[in-house]
Length: 434
Length: 63
Ligand code: HEM
Ligand code: SF4
Image (cartoon, rainbow over all chains, first blue to last red; front, side, top):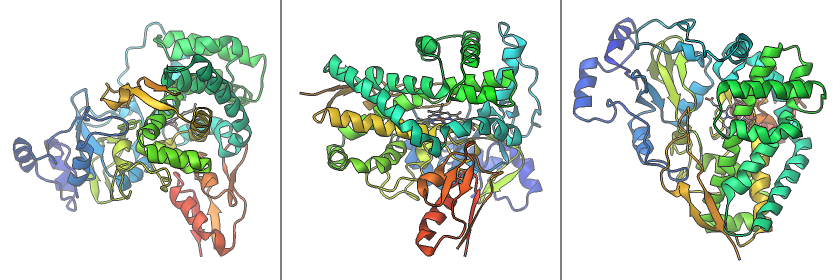
């Protein structure tokens, strides 16, 4: 199957005799007739974390990749099916660089951004820190070098020691929940504090600066404010190196700007996602009592259950946009040079070509291989830590409050997506017991 | 069965360790370490699964 991005790619078809892309006229006619394959798409807002929009199932039937309109008016593709999702995410011919954004589908790519107006209030070092160390927007060796400066602290091996710390943080928060009493919003009173405390510990944010971390990164703050905070944290840590990520970075051969940029990235990543997953996992369990019973009867199921939480409650409707850096044919799909491609991890994790009965939540299924943490070179750095946090948070809460029940969850009705990529929001998850 | 790993491709997310802890570990930088390059056939399923889940295609299993 071939994907036709826009009428302007006709020239591409001429130079590629093997392409079977539909002609622009046919596409236009089909779009006018309302054919979903050729009609441009926008991400559907009528879904929830545990019940994504039925539109994704229609899209998967229509094709592995469909046109997607971006908010600046250009058109790219959304990948709908599991196999293509993994193939795109592990293919180095797709770039993460935001400056590779095509002006139109056939216009040449900018190798470097047309000088973006510098944020006036950021100094040169801050800008360099953001430009050189935002791992999610780098490619190739430059990306791998920076990524490798943090993977050690987040490896499966490191988690063997870290689990004890996570356990303690979770136990403290369970005490808070019990002391607070029912009803209680698990998102603000349980999931978020657990995620924030773990983030502070693994990064090495000094205790006296920890409250400010939540204020600056959970609350609203300017980039400059956050950068100033990052520098104060790194300065403080530099006088007291320890077993944490910031110390690792300070001991490495990275420049100070690179350290600041990476710390900024790490402070911005994953904390909300962990809180979302803890909350959404509880919603999935409390709305599927037979699954909850299985896990309660056999807590050793938790490791596999976490994979199923990630698959069934996937947070990212699409991960960050990629751009094809050459004409790519991948699993029979033609993707012209310069095309923006957004992989829908929500859709891939519900693809019945790969998953048996994907709409069923089953804590005993083999859900490994889901793309809830992304996949490929940019796959989530924090995934092993996230797994430990989620598994401890769910296990300890169920053990402490065996009769916990769901009173109300905002996420059972569609909520607005969170920025900058489309993700589901956890919302308040109010539980009670007794 | 022979296993090889490409440490320069590894992105250190630890999928292999999760899948087959008796065959793979990670070093202090998170890079894959092969614990046994020619395990007996009882490890074959785990080795192949790790190879297929590896996000960097850094693991090869040959007969
Ligand atoms: C359940 C919780 C989490 C979820 C669902 C999640 C999800 C993701 C996804 C989908 C990506 C890939 C995005 C893309 O390819 O476009 C990603 C990347 C990333 N995540 Fe997570 N994440 C979680 C927790 C964490 C934690 C705890 C951290 C650690 C501080 C973290 C740090 C990162 C970083 C640094 C990247 C960029 C990796 C790179 O570009 O090489 N994440 N995450
Ligand atoms: S799964 Fe692949 S990329 Fe991940 S640690 Fe193992 S070898 Fe490296």
